[in-house]
Length: 384
Image 1: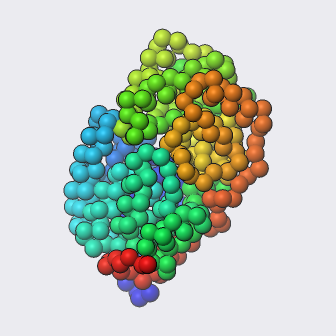
Image 2 (image 1 turned 180 degrees about the vertical axis):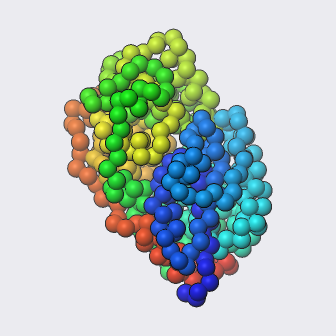
Image 3 (image 1 turned 90 degrees about the vertical axis):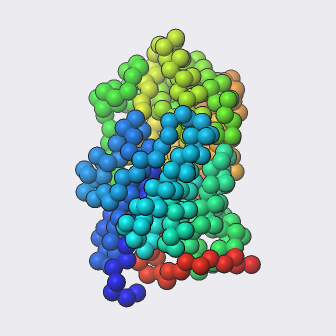
């Protein structure tokens, strides 16, 4: 490429997005021909969901813009309106920053806002984790972002094939693996009982002994049913009487149902051996995940990070349906007896052999090499 500095604008909309992007941000930061811009918005700037701005400052990253866009409500209309606000705010931000590429990840509705704004401003969009299939509205959002994007970084070969079937240019679709797993693989994080029992509420848990990690997020296409679903999981874990670290749900539609179910359960039952935590910094979370005996719920961490770590997973319901998964995942419905049996089976099995279905060496470097050197274009055409 020529000597012009290429400006890469990375969009961070959640605590987990920051963790999974961190190695990419560092790699961009090192390049003489690249300028890193970081725009943080949505739940990433809400203290209840993880203080990403403080983490960035600690890690030595500069914030270029902060976007306030998230409406409270935990329902579909709040998601829809948040998406609309986001388009307006991202458009103004991109107009001011004039990036050469906007870098987005996955399937969040906030990410859709950034992709729409960039596309209308004729700014090429690079998309990480396109081509995956999932449950909920995320399925539609992910594929919509793919069609708005110009450069595609799939995490596996099946997803790359889906992107190509969507009519994207073959020379702009790459299977690079999951950079979030590289973050896991290249670090040896640690966490203490003192830290875990200093944050959150509930009973004290000894993480030096076998424990469960519970992460169950809303299913946006099952609004009105989410509370009943979380109550089944709560009952299953409570009856097993196994030490558990339980993470608060994310901000998607249905979160208020889940949160209320958890609060009512905690206040009425005051369960022993369960500690409820809103969030942890990325390094602490990975350390906790590595030490867990089983992940229960419907988090993508169970599909991706746990596949690489060999952590047994009990995947509940439809949120991750269709995703490629390793042998470590046991799928169940919303029934507490079924969930209990699955947890017992996975705890008895213990760790699985590590899977490489989402992992490739040097994913972050590969992505940044491409961002630095690929020819840019704005006019998209369907490739038959």
